[in-house]
Amino acid sequence: MLGFFKRVKANADVRRLRRRTDDVRSPGGFAALCRSLIGQGRWSEALAVARDGVRRYPRALELADHLRLLWLRVGRDETQAAEAALEASPTEEAFERLVDLHLEGGELDLAVEVAERFAAAFPGSGDAAVAAAEAYGRRFARDLTAADGAAALAACRRAAGLRPGDADLRCASAEILLMAGAVGAARRELEAAVALAPSHEDAARRLAELPPAEPLATDEDEEAASLVAVEREDRPSAAWMASWPREQDAEAARRALFDELTLFARVAGVRRVAWIDAALRASASQHAEAEESAGDPFVESADVLRTALCFGAKRIGLGAVQEAELAAAGGRVLAYAGAGALLLVDVEPQVRTADLAARARDFVARHDAACEDRRHA
Image (tube, rainbow, N blue to C red):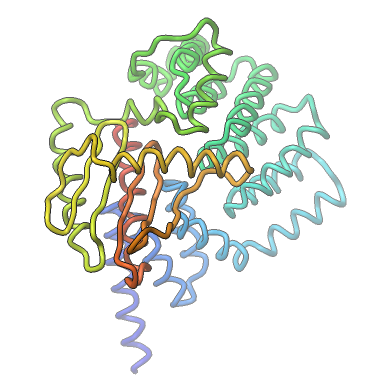
């Protein structure tokens, strides 16, 4: 009888959490739903939730960890069988299957490795080029390294050369270029997609949404400069810039962000917070509500720190830093990086940071997702 009531409560919790992820669209909501399903032994459902969460929040660390660990439990046998099949008979189908499984499990480095082997074994295969484009593109979205961006573009173009009538490949190239901020080159890819398939609604819509930009001398110059800039995080990508609310919505979005910063600064153990993105620089403290704070040394340090942390990590092959904890005089500073943005939290020396970290990750990931939602609205 007691077991029955426990199951009823657990199922009610799952329904509540599912509604939460639908309504709030929070990485914390996805993670909580994963934990609840795991606690009930519903591994496959938890894996599906983790996969949906990572698809929506590709830089959310807790969700990525859930996905990898759940895949080890649920998908390990399938992956091992695919590895054995590839070893026994290295066909295009076997390579493609293993790349897909690594991508499903969030193992992007392994997906890239297998995709490279696939492309080397079948240099004339469109499927091999598409697999490489997908693997490198997913890793570029996570790590924002110039090398991955260039490799993803090269694979897209190799695939387009092998499948010249495929407008989706042109759209894929445009997405990578927009992530890097190469608007002129992305525009030409989308124009080519529309020319190939005039009824391609997605290509036409994205073309109409593109922000204005001054292209460089050639597409190649623009791509190279943009990939370096996004790796250095000198500026946000064009895709992010295009997502900032239009004038009629900007004040409401700004006010909501200020309100959340103010609440964050009131959490026990937090002394002040700073936020920077393409549109504003703001700060709040225990004693002051959030306000625009251009020129505030704490806010300006967030900008310097974002560039130094993210670019430094990429230069040594670690990919983009998503969070860091730094010792400071009289306390600690927590840094959480998003797409073209950074949240800096100054905390008391002895405060426990687990709850603060979860809140900060949620804040940054929701900001990234809201930008993506607006871009595709």
